[in-house]
Image (tube, rainbow, N blue to C red; front, top):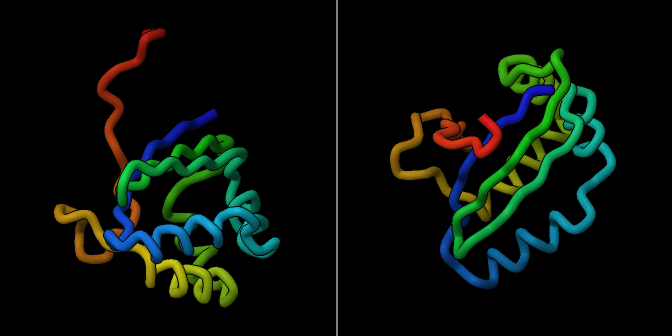
Length: 111
């Protein structure tokens, strides 16, 4: 199993943050299906202030390029991403077309 950690910021507005969390309490079936169809077994998002931290656990078939390609061909996912962008903002150091930024693991207690 592969494991990834990613980060993203929300717009620093308490009403927007609350709304973003509400959307994630019960995501649409089509969005969940697009995640699992890409080979993602589990996904968790944590928040501190307006910073988000996502953990993805995926099977061996998963890769970010495949997921991006699948998402680009899925109108429901595109609509969801457009909606979520109302709440999200890029990290200051993110690349031009980068939303969630892949984090580097720097410590593992079990290594």
